[in-house]
Figure 1 (cartoon, rainbow, N blue to C red):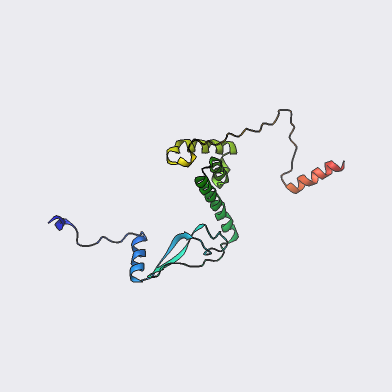
Figure 2 (figure 1 turned 30 degrees about the vertical axis):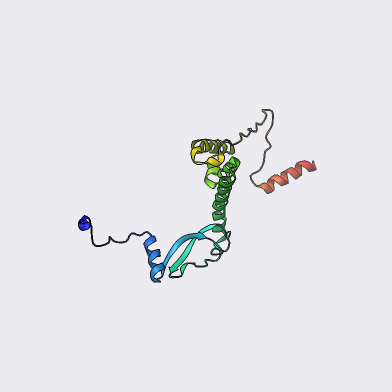
Length: 177
C-alpha cells in the first residue's frame, strides 16, 4: 500500500493562527487573537477605512472586532504618518501616476529623515526602473526630474535665532528702525 509509511498522528500545531481560526469557525470554541482588519471604528481616532491591528475573537459566527477606543494621541499621530504613506502608495498603484511614488517616499518618516527631496526622487526613479516588469501601470511613464534650487554666491544669509519667536521679534526690531 502506498500510504503504509505515512504517519498516523498529526504533528503538534504550530503557532500560526490559521488552524485555530478554522477550528473556532467549525466548532464554536472561541479563539482570541490580535489581527489585521479594516478598522471600521475599532480604533476610533484612526480612519475607518484603514487596516488596523487589534483584538479579534473568532467563533462559529465569524470574526468579531473588539472596540479599542482612542489610541493615545501621540500613537495615533505616528500611526497616521504610516497610513498616509500607504494611501499615497495605493494612489500611485491605482492611477499609474509615478509622481505619487515620489510623494509616498517623501512622506515616509525614515526616508525623509535621511534623504533630500532630490535623493528621494532619484531613488524612486531607480526603483521604478528596476521593478518596471511588475508595474505595468507605469509603462512609458517616468518620474519628472525636478530642478535643483541654487542660491547665488552673492546672497548673504540672514542670521536667524533658533527660537522662532526671537526671530520674529528681531525682524520687527529691524522694521522699526
